[in-house]
Length: 473
Ligand code: FAD
Image (cartoon, rainbow, N blue to C red; front, side, top):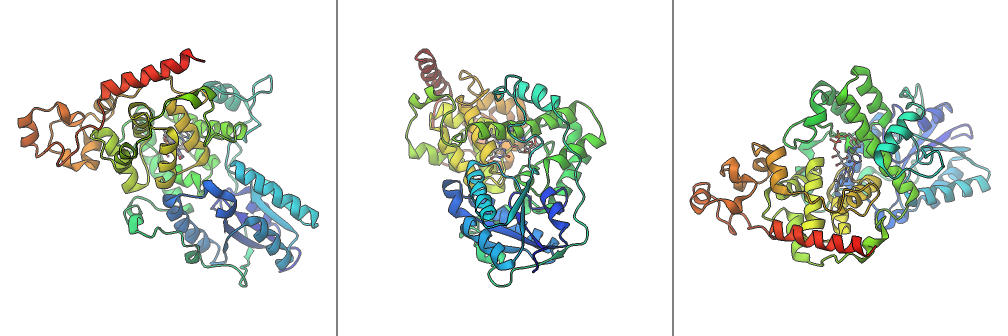
């Protein structure tokens, strides 16, 4: 390669269209496209199992779009990038900025190192509509309340830029000396758990575009209220595609706004706004994934109980809405947002288990596991985050089920052992008379567990614990 060629380092931007750094790099004519699996610097934030499965397929798809010229590596990017630059004799490395604290630290180190050796780095924004730090209150401090952040901060700022074209004619170059094959990254789980995920997703940039298209044709028309119905196809399911950058938020925002402009579109755009809010929180609170934003929660009397945690993880709590959600997660790598709130609230409020347990399990099993969204959402559910759900709001899985899964379609899909129960008892089988249970083929404790906690008592226990914390503040 010559000094006039460039490196584009793919990270969370696994696409060719609307990729600002790649587009600038392509002006060099010859580009070495690179991906590095950097568990070394990620440490405890190394990707979980479901994300690795997704990444494997996303890289295969990206490699196909690059005529098989993607160079992949595993290891410390702080060593790999400088070594590559020196070996390939290029002058500039391009990347799109990432916002996880460990990536920010690492990228700053690499940039300083390259600059000191006379090479340059050019970075762009590709993954957020408004980069953290650009949306602030008039007094210069960050927003902590979502509605103000979104309505005043984001919508009051410059509108998101229009998506960019794919790079034109580029000569892709591969490092034939040191690059690995994608299979050698060893991303697939050792047990064949991923086989069940496969039918639910089409990974890669084209899969993301197809998903968006499908949502534009169907779900968006019912999004505002339909987004709360877990059995219905009224949400976009774009989250893993956004997480891996197979589609940019700019592409989603403009595609939706181009079709029409109504309350459904506004609601969808405000959900993209929640994603921005999470990243903003992470930017201003780098400890968000581990530490309570409200430090008084450090004194909260969490319970330590592996049996309860395991029942929750396996979808065997005896509470149908919770179990349906946890099984949807295990079987598809995704859980509907309404059910994430129900299952999350059950873990931290009814079981009183620390939200870190939920955050870790989701991190490992969600295909859309995202450091900012996951940690901000868990803190929101636990009541210890910014603009969090009030401590006295304990989601009741029975009333939530009756409201949002009225006909039991969702519970019957994921908890088939209860399918024969009449709707009236589907969300609370413990209330069903013995003859109804036996007619429905349900044997409590044998075909389906009894509830692992009493919903009313555990709610009262949580409320007292939260109230005590509030009094002591
Ligand atoms: P849609 O309703 O179609 O929304 C479109 C997009 O907006 C989503 O893809 C997502 O990028 C964004 N979005 C929607 N809701 C939220 C939200 N509440 N917070 C932030 N962004 C949002 N989302 C993740 O992407 N990764 C996570 O790891 C994650 N963990 C969560 C953990 C808990 C306990 C909870 C309650 C929520 C979590 N969420 C997470 C947020 C939300 O549940 C998902 O983004 C959403 O369910 C994804 O489905 P969708 O793409 O169909 O969403």
